Image 1 (cartoon, rainbow, N blue to C red):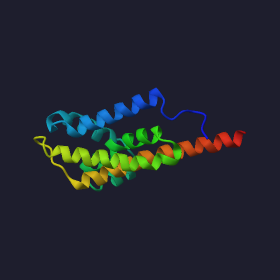
Image 2 (image 1 turned 120 degrees about the vertical axis):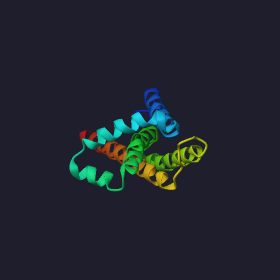
Image 3 (image 1 turned 90 degrees about the horizontal axis):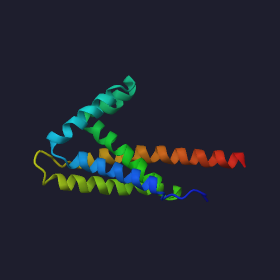
Image 4 (image 1 turned 135 degrees about the horizontal axis):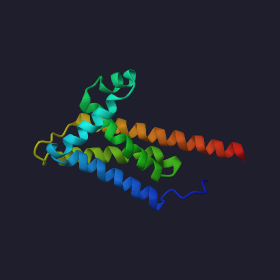
Length: 145
């Protein structure tokens, strides 16, 4: 059992900020979201060529949907106890489904079921990173004892 609380104010604040950023970027009209899209595409362009080929093989929109949800998956996984961290996938998929549903009412935004899949893949990546880091830290603490 961990001696550190999961729901610290800092973790909740960070998770809330990440959720707010994802919601703002995915629900803002395209004219407002486009600069963020360009920024993220430029950042992803700096990845090693093999990673870029993997990410952009399905297109820039898929890569962006994955990239936007990696931090959300990680933030939600950090808030949950380790054994419940995989539940962040369900929570992030629900956020994605809600966002895609709401986009139908926003001019210039087009809801797409494939975006939910891409977003959930991004959330899965963030979740796996958090789980691996937490398990590694737990094993390290056990080895020191």
